[in-house]
Image (cartoon, rainbow, N blue to C red; front, side, top):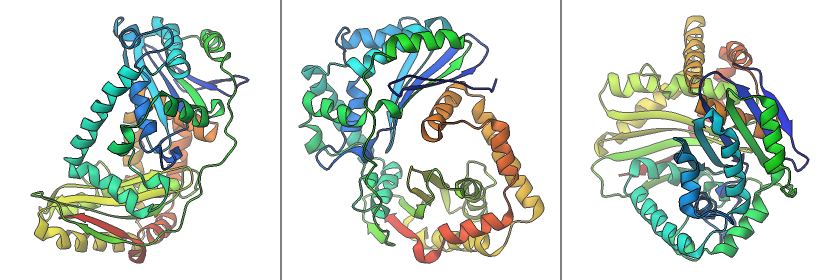
Length: 407
């Protein structure tokens, strides 16, 4: 199935396609713009746009936007992150042109009717309130705000209610003009579709879009200071994150950290933290480690939920496990097992063609190329115990770890 095909328009918009068999196709448009691109008066506007971009265009009402694909059994959705906005869909392959035309209409011709904007503000206010009632989710955003204090990348994607209520069509159009750059857009496709047909449709619907190139770099990162913060919450369970800033998406140490993260607290039940905290002691039901790279920085940490009186015991065990990774190189068999586990997880994930579509689109957007799975596997196999030891000592240095606790 691998073997990617590429096309680039004169306005900078790029296309990547991977051929697959089957009747269902998957398509997305990823824009290299997210909440970190907002100024202090725009907090939450990138996420707001993701909601209201479906609410009508110059030639379609909101109902017709939603129905365009759903009437033929397709599914359309969107998401916003700190650095990305994405619209994506799955549909029967014969509706590929229909989907491409709809995406173009949504992204470049949305009308943002006042009535629809006001309705969607209420939806997002409910979303914000729901989020505040979920401490196990909220703590991740609060932790990013802690370690990226004073920088836009640390801000919550959902924004603030008082600013949300003020947004109007003019604010939205200004943000889009300032941040939806054509040379920072990728259309990604997976399906049983002739590439020549895709190129023809892309030229038809996207070539007329005027070029709008990114000129200014994103705001540079500020300094980092270790923090230890306790927030009192009226919850039965305590929640805690311990972590640090980490490597950016282009760092040669990104892959070693991804493998180390998988060993430490990845999705496998045999992760070191799951075995130590849950299986041996029964201290926690939820324990995981995470690593999220951004364009110029990253975040790595460990999250757990436990009874309030067991927080310190859990932290003691976590520090012990981190010290082992810093002091004891993985043996040949341990390293081989860890590599096989990660490769297997990636192979399973790639079988989900919607995930594959988003992954190749993101890779092409950021690196202007996509490594085959075989190339990625080779890079994983080449990792050494020494590299993992070095990464463990840099990222999980006790003197650099911040802690946020809800208790």
